[in-house]
Image (cartoon, rainbow, N blue to C red; front, side, top):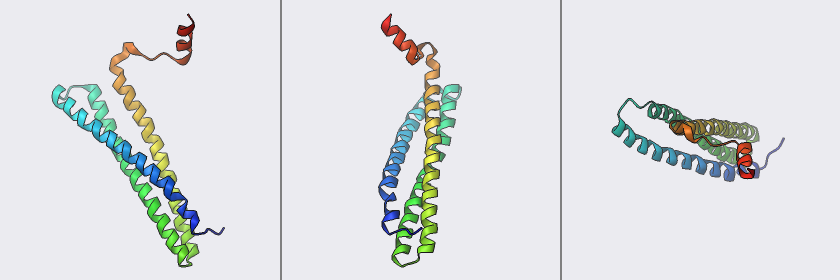
Length: 146
């Protein structure tokens, strides 16, 4: 298969948008860490929900760091691939482009895991409000027609 100089360039908009989304997730998590830090100083060390949130956030920070690093590796290897195509080193360019795609795919997979953990963290936040469960869709529809 032969790739042109435009093929690796097609990844730039996708990677840029994904990196922007990763940065937004990081900033939201940083804000959450600051608010949890204030709660921790107020409540002390015996709050189990708070400990669960802190543990979850530590792991999610590592995931976001890896997502961002793989995204950056993907864009850097795409740029190198473009350069290698430009100087007619297509065999190495193919390998770097494949690596770029692989890094981007792994980054998106880690993002999927982080989103799942984010939902679990929100469930943990809601766990102390047990009497306020959200009804299922069917229960909601039944209430509307009663």
